[in-house]
Image (cartoon, rainbow, N blue to C red; front, side, top):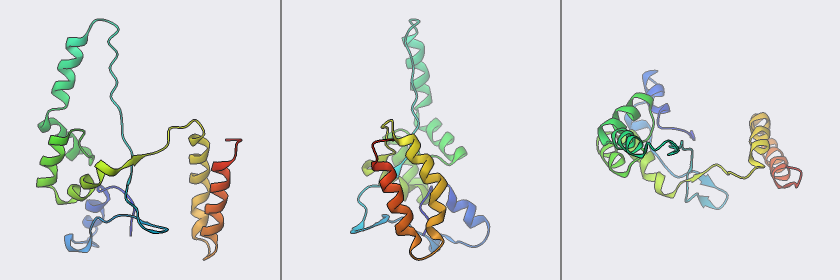
Length: 153
């Protein structure tokens, strides 16, 4: 099982180790069963209308978010589209992306609280130790929980 992006599938397939019948998209397992939401990341486009350029900003966004450009960009960089209509079109034409796109409506993003940055750094620096022994995962996750819950972060 791999938790990650649909972009991994063509990379693994190109090695000859995975065929289209060897994989599927499923909910991540959780402590009490399958999780009902997926962890997602997103990027934002922000436009500031401080110079009276509202018409130009609108024209750019209308251009950039056309389905044909969304799909071309997403196919080039192995991303998921930003619009519902492009998502529907890509789901119909790309079985790899379809499974991931189906999870988007129930997805959650990384926390935005100010204490998330040190917690993320701690996770990145310690999570690898969770695979060292059968008991290591519980210990590492417990330490991460304690760190994340502490008032010092």
